[in-house]
Amino acid sequence: MYRLVGMSELLKTAYMLSYPYLHRDQEVTATTLKTGLRQHLKVVQPGVARSSELVTEFMVADASTRALLDILELTEQPSCSSDPALVLRKVIASFAFIGQSDGQLGELFRTVVDRVLVTTNVNVPGSASSPRAIGVLWIQPTDEWEEQDFVEALIHELTHTLLYLDEQRYVHYIRAEALQDKSTWVASAIRSEARPVNGVAHSILVATEILCLRRDWQLGHNGIALHGDSNIILSKTVHALDELQNQPDSWNLLSPRMQSLLHLAGATLTSLEQEGLSQRL
Image (cartoon, rainbow, N blue to C red; front, top):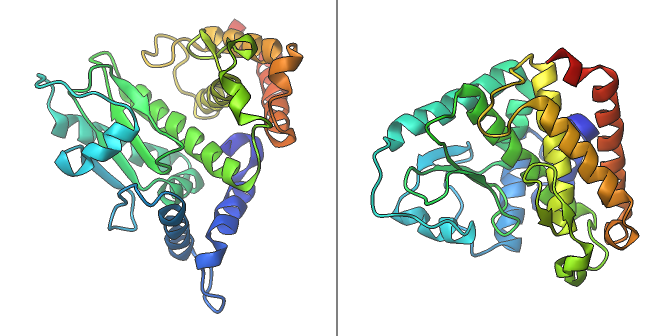
């Protein structure tokens, strides 16, 4: 989303959602925008516990955040050998790297992300976010994760979060009840498994963002534990988009807004192919 529509469009979405909670005589700053957006999310999702701090809160999940893990459908196990404090430090360091690499992106993250929860005892490691708890991210690495995996996990979930907010401004799906019709499911870009079209659309946009991130920041392309090699991601993402666009029953479940975002992703993927991304790896 950040690279597809740009910072101005994303801030406009945050502003429009925050508008009812902004003081008319008050200058709009990063602080007032985050305050307004936090209030909006409290109203539309009253059952989600929000941080008492305006800055993004990075924390090891504990009893006070158990309900948030439930919303994210995460199951904890009794014990584990990893040090959660060490994992938390790695997540914070990776966020610092994002801010140092692109100050605007770091500021956007601080505006829309309320909490980043870290665990070491969830049964399946990875990262997650949810439209039912917008602004809450979760991360639990595997032993194979390097710094780039942590960075990509944060960008991955930030992209989902920006899409959830975009969906509150625009309609993303024409008939939400039809999303569970398995005859409309297609293979996703990252998991390569048949999924509802909303999950497939998100996977295409997330994968495109990750590929652009690697290109723009000159990150590694091969041997990345979380998302895999760039040439494989590119191939799977192009295939997922082609399959989605070539199945009218699936494509027509998407609103004009979501279709336009996927067209932008398609143009970016074509550019990556023309740049010879896979040949340079």
